[in-house]
Length: 141
Image (cartoon, rainbow, N blue to C red):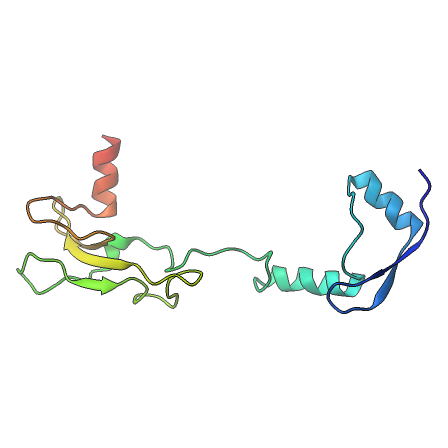
Protein backbone atom coordinates (compact mmCIF):
# COMPACT_ATOMS: atom_id res chain seq x y z
CA UNK A 1 0.00 0.00 0.00
CA UNK A 2 1.36 3.43 -0.93
CA UNK A 3 1.21 6.25 1.60
CA UNK A 4 1.50 9.98 0.92
CA UNK A 5 2.26 12.78 3.38
CA UNK A 6 -0.84 14.55 4.73
CA UNK A 7 -1.44 17.76 6.64
CA UNK A 8 -3.86 17.35 9.54
CA UNK A 9 -5.35 20.04 11.82
CA UNK A 10 -4.83 19.33 15.55
CA UNK A 11 -8.09 18.86 17.44
CA UNK A 12 -6.72 20.63 20.55
CA UNK A 13 -4.55 23.54 19.40
CA UNK A 14 -5.75 23.99 15.79
CA UNK A 15 -2.24 23.92 14.26
CA UNK A 16 -1.55 21.93 11.11
CA UNK A 17 0.91 19.08 11.48
CA UNK A 18 2.31 16.56 8.99
CA UNK A 19 1.29 12.91 9.04
CA UNK A 20 4.14 11.52 6.98
CA UNK A 21 4.05 8.42 4.81
CA UNK A 22 6.52 6.82 7.23
CA UNK A 23 4.22 7.56 10.21
CA UNK A 24 1.23 6.22 8.27
CA UNK A 25 3.11 2.99 7.54
CA UNK A 26 4.00 2.63 11.24
CA UNK A 27 0.34 3.25 12.18
CA UNK A 28 -0.80 0.57 9.70
CA UNK A 29 1.71 -1.95 11.10
CA UNK A 30 0.30 -1.37 14.59
CA UNK A 31 -3.26 -1.86 13.37
CA UNK A 32 -4.39 1.76 13.65
CA UNK A 33 -6.94 2.64 10.99
CA UNK A 34 -7.61 6.31 11.79
CA UNK A 35 -5.30 9.27 11.36
CA UNK A 36 -4.08 11.03 14.53
CA UNK A 37 -6.26 13.86 15.84
CA UNK A 38 -3.58 15.72 17.79
CA UNK A 39 -0.10 17.02 17.05
CA UNK A 40 2.90 15.52 18.88
CA UNK A 41 3.02 18.37 21.44
CA UNK A 42 -0.67 18.05 22.34
CA UNK A 43 -0.43 14.23 22.53
CA UNK A 44 2.56 14.53 24.85
CA UNK A 45 0.80 17.12 27.03
CA UNK A 46 -2.26 14.86 27.21
CA UNK A 47 -0.13 11.86 28.25
CA UNK A 48 1.58 13.88 30.99
CA UNK A 49 -1.75 15.16 32.25
CA UNK A 50 -3.16 11.61 32.33
CA UNK A 51 -0.08 10.34 34.18
CA UNK A 52 -0.66 13.01 36.82
CA UNK A 53 -4.26 11.79 37.24
CA UNK A 54 -5.83 14.95 35.86
CA UNK A 55 -7.01 13.85 32.43
CA UNK A 56 -9.60 11.49 31.05
CA UNK A 57 -7.08 8.66 31.03
CA UNK A 58 -6.17 9.08 34.71
CA UNK A 59 -7.09 6.65 37.45
CA UNK A 60 -10.75 6.57 38.30
CA UNK A 61 -11.77 6.78 41.90
CA UNK A 62 -15.02 5.80 43.52
CA UNK A 63 -16.97 8.70 45.03
CA UNK A 64 -16.88 8.71 48.84
CA UNK A 65 -13.48 7.09 49.20
CA UNK A 66 -13.23 3.38 49.60
CA UNK A 67 -12.46 2.51 53.20
CA UNK A 68 -14.23 0.02 55.40
CA UNK A 69 -17.58 1.25 56.62
CA UNK A 70 -17.33 -0.85 59.75
CA UNK A 71 -14.52 1.29 61.12
CA UNK A 72 -16.17 4.69 60.92
CA UNK A 73 -17.68 4.63 64.39
CA UNK A 74 -20.60 7.02 63.95
CA UNK A 75 -23.20 5.85 66.41
CA UNK A 76 -26.47 7.45 67.39
CA UNK A 77 -27.42 8.39 70.94
CA UNK A 78 -26.20 5.68 73.26
CA UNK A 79 -28.78 3.00 73.91
CA UNK A 80 -31.44 4.53 71.61
CA UNK A 81 -31.49 1.47 69.33
CA UNK A 82 -32.59 3.59 66.36
CA UNK A 83 -30.35 4.58 63.49
CA UNK A 84 -29.45 8.19 62.90
CA UNK A 85 -29.73 9.16 59.21
CA UNK A 86 -26.97 11.16 57.60
CA UNK A 87 -25.93 12.06 54.09
CA UNK A 88 -23.25 9.97 52.45
CA UNK A 89 -20.28 12.04 51.53
CA UNK A 90 -19.98 13.76 54.89
CA UNK A 91 -17.00 11.61 55.77
CA UNK A 92 -14.94 12.53 52.68
CA UNK A 93 -14.31 15.25 50.13
CA UNK A 94 -16.57 13.73 47.44
CA UNK A 95 -20.21 14.75 47.32
CA UNK A 96 -22.09 12.17 45.27
CA UNK A 97 -21.07 11.30 41.77
CA UNK A 98 -21.61 12.73 38.31
CA UNK A 99 -24.41 15.13 39.17
CA UNK A 100 -26.37 12.76 41.39
CA UNK A 101 -27.59 13.70 44.83
CA UNK A 102 -25.64 12.09 47.69
CA UNK A 103 -27.10 8.82 48.92
CA UNK A 104 -28.57 8.56 52.37
CA UNK A 105 -26.62 6.45 54.85
CA UNK A 106 -27.73 5.23 58.28
CA UNK A 107 -25.77 4.55 61.43
CA UNK A 108 -26.30 1.16 63.03
CA UNK A 109 -24.72 -1.25 65.50
CA UNK A 110 -23.52 -4.65 64.25
CA UNK A 111 -25.67 -7.44 65.73
CA UNK A 112 -22.71 -9.83 65.86
CA UNK A 113 -19.80 -7.80 67.25
CA UNK A 114 -21.40 -4.55 68.49
CA UNK A 115 -19.25 -2.30 66.29
CA UNK A 116 -20.82 0.94 65.06
CA UNK A 117 -21.23 0.87 61.26
CA UNK A 118 -23.10 2.63 58.45
CA UNK A 119 -25.47 1.02 55.98
CA UNK A 120 -27.13 2.33 52.79
CA UNK A 121 -30.61 1.27 53.93
CA UNK A 122 -32.79 2.14 56.89
CA UNK A 123 -32.57 -0.72 59.40
CA UNK A 124 -35.96 -2.04 60.53
CA UNK A 125 -36.66 -2.96 64.15
CA UNK A 126 -36.35 -6.70 64.68
CA UNK A 127 -33.95 -7.18 61.70
CA UNK A 128 -30.29 -7.72 62.40
CA UNK A 129 -27.70 -5.45 60.80
CA UNK A 130 -24.08 -6.55 60.40
CA UNK A 131 -20.85 -4.68 59.75
CA UNK A 132 -18.98 -5.50 56.56
CA UNK A 133 -16.60 -7.97 58.24
CA UNK A 134 -19.31 -9.92 60.07
CA UNK A 135 -21.56 -9.97 57.00
CA UNK A 136 -18.70 -11.37 54.91
CA UNK A 137 -18.05 -14.08 57.50
CA UNK A 138 -21.75 -15.04 57.62
CA UNK A 139 -22.07 -15.03 53.83
CA UNK A 140 -18.95 -17.13 53.26
CA UNK A 141 -20.01 -19.67 55.86
